Length: 182
Ligand SMILES: Nc1ncnc2c1ncn2[C@@H]1O[C@H](COP(=O)(O)OP(=O)(O)O)[C@@H](O)[C@H]1O
Ligand SMILES: O=P(O)(O)OC[C@H]1O[C@H](OP(=O)(O)OP(=O)(O)O)[C@H](O)[C@@H]1O
Figure 1 (tube, rainbow, N blue to C red):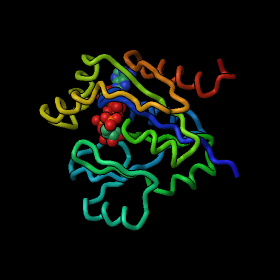
Figure 2: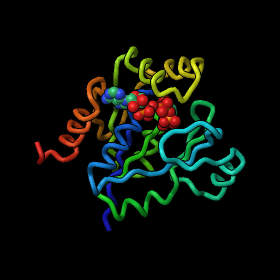
Figure 3: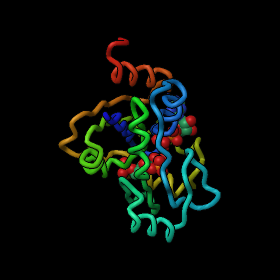
Figure 4: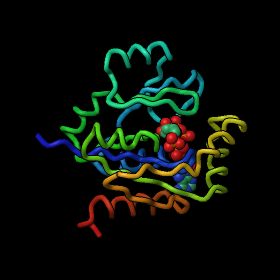
């Protein structure tokens, strides 16, 4: 049975990863999102995710519950192994990943498409502040990772500027993923 590609949505904080994932999920019936497991503290909202304690997260790592996991922003993030079940049923499976785990993701998933979103620093700062999930100090810390680059050796990378409207970004992504539409 063939497995659908994993579509990694990456880019700096505030660039629009979760917005893009949500919009694609709503617009394209065959493309689904993976729910991440995150040790995000109570009270901090975000995308649809499973909130767990650090102890529970460590337990899940030990049990082999994750296809991929990494630390970032003082939190732990995991992509559950159930992603493989989803890949059997979908045309594509999207997940918000750290740029630092992309080579590992390519190794684990085999078929990986990286959608690298970009925007000017002023746009990022404005969006982070508008999102308001983090305080000012944490927003500033996240901005320091804004220019992190992608690792060498990725097979399929699509770079897209999300400075304009979300709608035009989604159209561009779909043109790349489904070239026959263009
Ligand atoms: N193309 C866009 N135009 C305007 N606002 C956007 C766009 N994409 C995302 N946003 C807004 O920017 C903020 C950060 O977006 P989010 O999806 O949380 O980014 P990320 O997941 O990359 O941190 C949110 O308030 C979101 O509504
Ligand atoms: O190594 P980087 O590419 O800089 O990514 C670091 C982390 O930032 C994002 O998390 P999250 O979606 O929780 O944060 P964000 O919305 O502020 O980007 C991403 O999924 C990584 O977990």
